[in-house]
Image 1 (cartoon, rainbow, N blue to C red):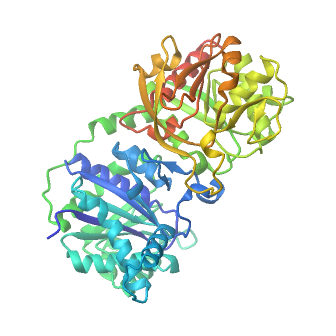
Image 2 (image 1 turned 60 degrees about the vertical axis):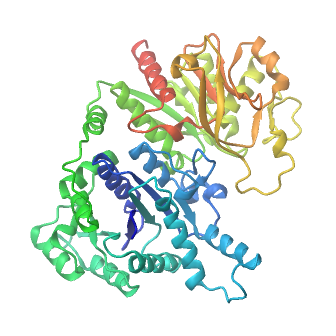
Image 3 (image 1 turned 45 degrees about the vertical axis):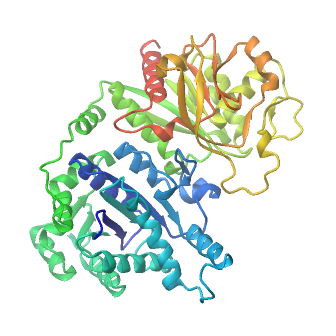
Length: 538
């Protein structure tokens, strides 16, 4: 008998309905009731992981402490639950097939013909149950990417069907998220797409236990009855998911609809009473009732797609609430930023963040943004590539090394102040080979970051190949670009600051990956506070 309960979240009718937010919201409610919960994502694409995907294709690549490059939904899971995820929380079709093929090459299948059923499905079931068998969780919620009926998703759906049979209905639950479209010409909500979606799921041998219905308008009792009758679920298992002003409203909306209650009932788990969401609701209250406003510029080259910088945008929401400030993020495309327009684009900002990224497109715009922030004492945070641009800008405009650059952008630069990490020079494969995951950093006294963190030793997540070139460190420090964070193992520079600037910090790591509702990242909290101070002193 399984002691861990499994919840599967599938989607139908349309993509981008918010399976990740529903999964995270349910997990939050169950966690608040005292259950140990984790969430994993099964992605049906053949890439091993999203590490080599363009942000325009898939949004940001989220990185875990153990160095997994994962789907951005894992960021939602961590931000809601305040519990770290790992390699086991994100599985792709590519990784499944890679593992099965490697086993076949080792002769593990004893001469059998390797097939989707049972070999691929067995591998999927094994990956689903890794977290459950660890003994760390009472409930594992598994979100299945894509929509029911997709060819790519079929092996996952079949694996869920098998698991429900093997573990029993008391240990497995399927939540099906669908769209209830509103036809303005007819002035009514239509249930037929949901009925067809549930039918498609049933054709694969799975009966949905709970329906979560995304809608722009409230569901009437008559409509709920119709959905329950034709989709073969109880009326209490028809859950309305109406459009919300913020994703952080969704746990409360799901609580009102009783999603956690019906889930516990169907899994035979004890109902411990209404979950205390005191801290969560305090955060939502501060987020919705700011006492002041600031505008922070986000300088990047993927700004057309908000999901490219999802964790950064969410970190500003957390930090804004901590300061009781509404942060308006003004996206500025670095490719169209230069010396002639930088002042007009940035003069209304209260702070600036130069975003991470790869490749030479839009680089000079980022350098100009750094220069403007430095010269005008505008609060500045540079993340990863943003930190490297700060080093390049300082080298060019303060040290006078006019050709200073990163060898990523110019292999033949006379002054490679940013260079390829030594251990990266022999690497040819692009996937999963960067410096990834959590690395230690020692903070120096009398620095902004030491005041911000309040400790001397920190761990932050990384994702990069190029680094600050220590050959130029003495020169740069003598000129006023202080090194205030060092990796103790590698002696790599992690953090730079400018001496005669109120708030100027560049970090090689990604602080946005560790910001959560319960623990807003202190760097973002401090940057927003500096932006408010700058705004008040204008």
